[in-house]
Image (tube, rainbow, N blue to C red; front, top):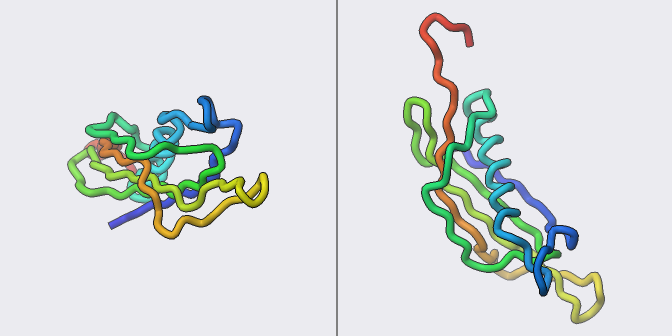
Length: 129
């Protein structure tokens, strides 16, 4: 089973709400990048993220978080691929000791999950790869 992992620091410039809260679209964009890489690695093509069957926001994402985003293909159709995507916070800002302080979390914090459908080009009979 192919699995892709992206890690990303959430910049303070990405916070749009009080308390350093980051909008849900931030993680959705990273899910799209992970889906594209999965398609490139497995199909040799960027593919097309056709839609989401399910998206759940479990915990907030905050400026200063370090995200680990994982995607895996769970089923393969003729032209479609079903993906499971997860985003976890692995470390978070902690300003108690100093302004730039951060702590590695003892356990990853699940913030967002999704099930998506990726569509890849079909191969036409007689066409070159």
